[in-house]
Image (tube, rainbow, N blue to C red):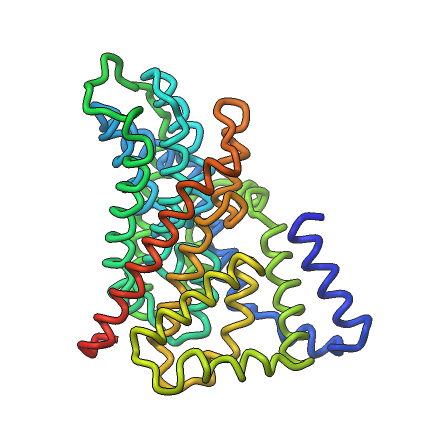
Amino acid sequence: MDRPAASLIGAVLMVVTGVLTRHQAAASIDLSVLSLLLGMMLLISYFVRSGLILWMAGRLVSLSSNPIQLLWVTVWGAGILSALFVNDTICLLMTPLVIAAARFRRLNPEPYLLALATSSNIGSVMTLTGNPQNMLIGQSSGWSWPGFALFMMPIGLVCLTINGGVIQLFYRNEISHQPFIQHLDEPVEVDRHLAVKVVVVVALLLIAFLCGAPLDISALTAAVVIFVWAGEPPEKAFSDVDWSLLIFFAGLFVVMGGVTRAGNQWIHHMMPFVIGGNRGRLQQIAVFSAISTIGSNLFSNVPFVMLMKTSLIKLHHASLFWLALAASSTFAGNLTMIGSVANMIVAQRAKDDCPLSFWVFLRVGLATTLLTITASVLMLWVGAKYGWV
């Protein structure tokens, strides 16, 4: 049973068993989050069809002149692109490029695929539109897009550096400074007219985000503008929308609405223990991040964020813990291969060329997860100590 089907079954059961009425179930669905997801997916569809993202990814890969440079180009390219265009999309596009680059240069693709998956997760933490759980946090926390990015970009950049270092250390015998003899030079066709239009719309969307415009309205407006301006049938874009993801979210909203209504007092009782008492701020952030990491791997990060947001909304001065939730729930996705959708996309697309085993991923994922979460805790503590958050 896949996740969309499971969430839909759960949502139906919430109504059938009387936990929620039909009206309460409908009211629990957050249309602003679904609208943001839909708008971003439609816009990304035009970006992909213009060939521009593929060209950008290809250029990033071709910039390297030795195996170590290829690793770091993959780390930084996947991380930064994921912050702008959602991590799952970047993994979908870059996996075949990374495999082709490694095979063309007679390298083992494994470390580069691991770098792609883990870095796309880490990079996505830098913006409110980088991954689905951040979109949820953006709609509930009160953080603006530029305000969130201002605090999370340094954390994301530091953690990308840590992640690249971990992978280089684990694969130090396979990755060297020896220059490539062959170079990847496969031209990618770009629809220049569509690409220019998409770049203009994306630039205007980022400006709207920076100016504090509502994320959902901005994304839908951008999608509508590109519909009219592109001069192509919109049904092509609608066919690219991941409707199963929207169903998954809608069902999950109903399930979490039922959990909240039935009584999640254990979360409310837990929160004073986690962030209250005589604990210092460093201990509070550390304990909260540890619980978030465990919860994100038990329930998956999106459901866990949904579960936690009702408690965080009621807390005074919760802005710091929203950032901690974003960082820990995102970085927790790197712990195992099934920890995030991005990981599974890379593993699925690479299974015929370079199968990634669960234990190989866990070896790298455990180290990078522990180190990046520790780094995020320390950086958030410094921010709180000096009154930046």
